[in-house]
Image (cartoon, rainbow, N blue to C red; front, top):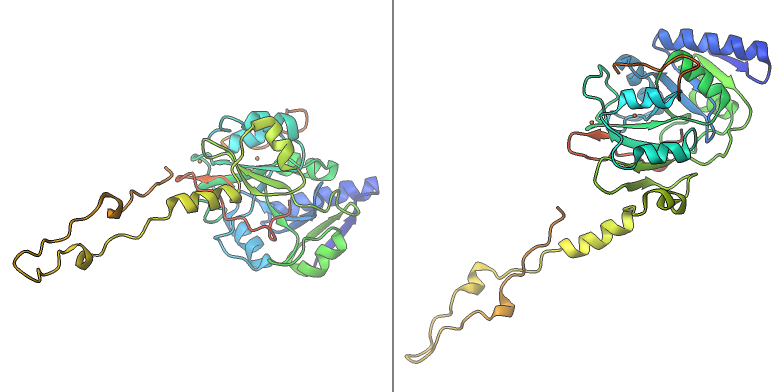
Length: 297
């Protein structure tokens, strides 16, 4: 049976955090507040718990959850590297509403789903969330809703949608912004905006300069479009109609144009007192397939 704890009351908050940690260690789900929306989380290093989380939301392994961390040190232990701009973005926006996708640390024994070697990581700006994360370690967290539904802004809304699938609800009042985090992919040479959110594109550009977006993809599609080619039967010279009939020649402009192509802890989360995570999945530097309506944390 689920239990909800009022984190506005110090005693209830302490008791709720303790109950949540116990539930997470048992492989159960916990709903927690963040600075964006409410999230539903589990131990990132317990594959069965991650499966339970995905089942509770009604989604498959092709949509792996991001990971929330309680410190920057925890985030760096989860990723292979931060790329050219990762540290600058962390310095500017963490803790806060920016999720970065990096290549995952290949030495970690976890299974978040079909990540393609990448992991999405964020450090939220919320006291209750950070307290839980620093005690429990990295958590796989998705927005507290059924897949395709609006994200929950309160613990009550989360409980209405997830019910007894969650063991502990940490109620800290309405979620901070109610807008999902911005997601940026750092697995390639140029950062790519995967989802617009609480951190504006303009603010991101002030740190990294150039950012690829869906609009850039559309332009590239235009460039990559292969012009129509001549069919074999069109290339063949027609049968001459008479003795002097010359076979037609291919003009330079008729030849097919060339196609233009574009060319992933050991350390866990430190305890309190340490400095201040994972959608990249990066073997192929492929960005995680995060859908706009699914990810809130």
